[in-house]
Length: 119
DNA sequence: CATATGACGACAA
DNA sequence: ATTGTCGCCATAT
Image (cartoon, rainbow, N blue to C red; front, side, top):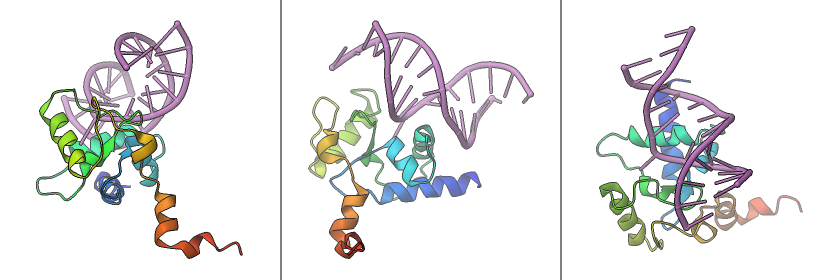
């Protein structure tokens, strides 16, 4: 696979994170079909071109912490964007239990029939 | 080909 | 909660 294609896969996975939810780097990597590729997601985010439409702020560490250094420009920008969509950021962290994106659950809510295919 | 570098993650102290 | 170590893996040099 070409490097550009991989970047696109990762960016697409991030575009699927719904407003008000967050996903970890590793989670996005798996969805993009790159197991253990958390670092590749970080790489992909650094390659975002100007004018992109990728909700980069919805990607945080598995621990719930914002990846940027506390107090830095990007750190503040990310906290602000998350707050803007009602995601609580306390001391640089987000409660993953509460805000972690669950694709499977989304499926159930959007297409209930998909969960009944065993009847 | 050899090393260094990360917007990471799991785990042990 | 923090910090350090180690594993991981595409890129960069």
